[in-house]
Length: 301
Image 1 (tube, rainbow, N blue to C red):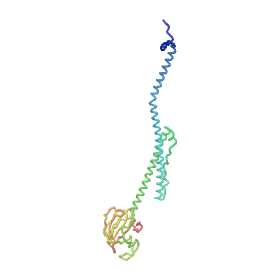
Image 2: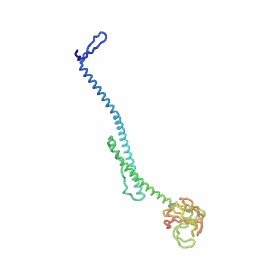
Image 3: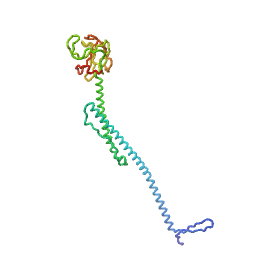
Image 4: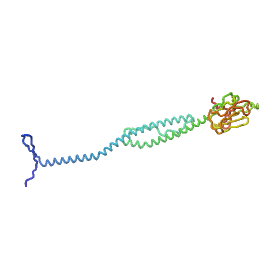
């Protein structure tokens, strides 16, 4: 049996008259080369397969990095806005304090800011995911503090609004207008009664004016009485609230109904000469909690 050859002969044929060359390659070398090529191919295939298996994870990581960067930028923006809002709340608090001191003459030491301006930490500007998550975890607490302070400020401003509404209502209810135009013939105080000639307390002021002259409401109020009242003739009484009532006597006509709400400057009656009167004029009184007061104290004209 012939011995198996241990080498491979390769014939290299040239062009035209070039001689044929023989290249002898040992079989062992060929097998080793083939093995190396097979290992290289297998390694390349495994590497490519591993690359393909890691490709989705790489894409996911890239997405997460982008989202983390966006989260970091958002955190910085939120922190900046919180700083602005907190500073605004602090300004409102200071204005509230000044306003309360102005209207009450004293400040409230118990009223203080629940939180100051929110600063943006360096970690939020530099750090990636860990710092962002720390800031994100602390954000609800800071937002809660800011919300609590805002609610407290809202309540405080509501109280101030109620106070000023009440002051506005008091001002609107103060009888600051002279009810009719004419000549002042008798002041508030002790005087000689024009009918009895006795010294008596005159609980209002008398304004002489032509018969039928309009009588205007000196402030907002509600009609609580209209009718005849002895020497005062036709009388109208308006309740302005806060214990203040005004009375109008010797009227020739009453132009409002009992219980009617009247506004400052509205026509309510006409000057007359009813009751004990020496001529057409308006008897005007201001009473505070039932006690007669000098109407001049209220008139701003």
